[in-house]
Image 1 (cartoon, one colour):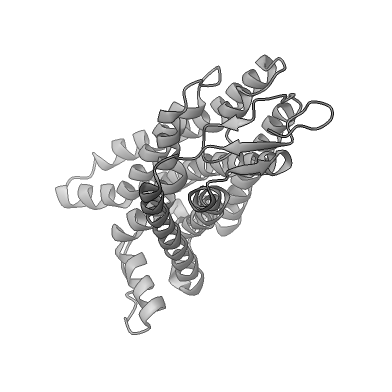
Image 2 (cartoon, helix red, strand yellow):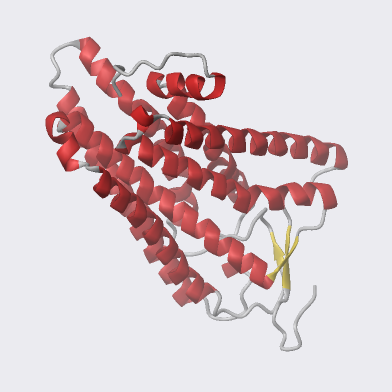
Length: 317
């Protein structure tokens, strides 16, 4: 462990997933393949939404922001994990660790709010179809997306303000594959109660309030769909929300378990596995979940990539 002259930790060591060399190679190949596929999937969604004029609507505008966020997300977490399998050296400077923590928290909070915005958009499309264009104009969609990003980065700044003021005297071993809140709080040699309280309150605001908006939106959607007289109409309405519901369940369940706690966790082996779910698996699955259940996106994707499919403009959401 290397310390500064004042006794403060100069760098941290990320444990990652310590295994035998054959398994390290297997894990490297697995996570590297996921990394490349996630980059490709989300880049294709962004380009498809951007290049297809008929997809220039709020629903796909938010989907493009979500894919851009996922691209940024995996570039904050996976490269450090891949490097640990190659060099078995998970050293990261104090400044680098704080920077990684800041962007990770910002992106996680932004995704929570953005998923809530997407749920509200689905609520307007299903419950207020005749007034949808007036209730969700392009200007409002842009402001909602900007608010999602702004709230996420502001929340992260507030958390980091309290965490970075703590003293870290040693040890400097982080039992994780990236710099996360609980591992850092448990390494501090100063009073961390205030930082824990701020982290907990902001986690409640940035996770539970968007989740409440999601639940409220889908409660209204379910009530409206159940009034549709035909079973075919009900199935069609539910199918437009199924992909978003799947993403919400996976993402919110894992983040609530990890961050909506009044105190930092002291056991991290299970936490690391759950972190893989929302930092690596969810960004990988999001494009597939949204595209496989949306014929319009699939047709636009084929047209963008293959350049030979006629795009049907009359397909509904």
